[in-house]
Length: 297
Image (cartoon, rainbow, N blue to C red; front, side):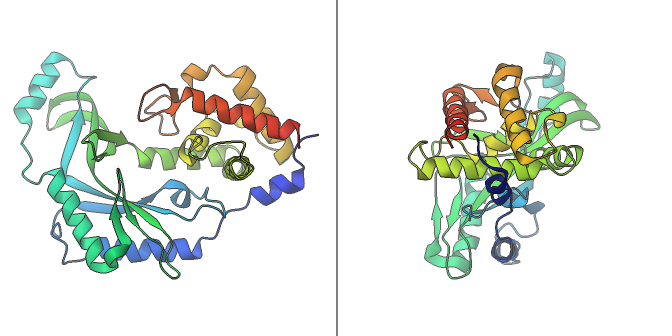
């Protein structure tokens, strides 16, 4: 029978944005305080995640904020030739403001404003909800550059992202601006069907978790956005029922899953043991559970 259009229509709606907007502005103004130890350095505060990409649903309350320091950057040189790597090493100036100190300064700035609501997690700095303020996660990041060319500081090409370190000291790099811009382009190319379909998939995941048919954390929103990002634009349109069926059929029958990419187009979507990719077994578990829910509705 399948999930009726009326249910998919309900699931397609965006969650509340007023409280999220107020939460973001409170955190942004705090991070931009002239009393912060990094005040005077070059940095930028911006949104990432579901709220920032207009794909948030009612059950998602977190606001994801990034503060990216641009005076210091980390590099990926794997695409450069030996000669280019030598030129990079010659031009490089070591940083004096280390990541550990920078993150500590961000934590201190947030704690000065939000007190004991601030907790440092494995990757993000969590700010608990309080009153009308929603829960928020802040990433203290530095600029990241994946170089495609380097002959000198005046002759180079790179993809710009962010990077940060988890509690174990492992560097994690990502490209939130590319992710957001690509989602918006996809949405426009699909005549505004894409983001509602993302919200449908997220709500479907939430129902599977609530019903005990999917373990929480198996299907992060970031990867669900990436999964639908790969679906050809002609699969969207007409109705939510037809769009869902066409998208899932393409994923299961028409796609070479080894070639699916994250929405930022910098990493493959499905891989095993890669921190920037969705575990293949988790993706299959979600896809199979989603199809089973559809078929048994």
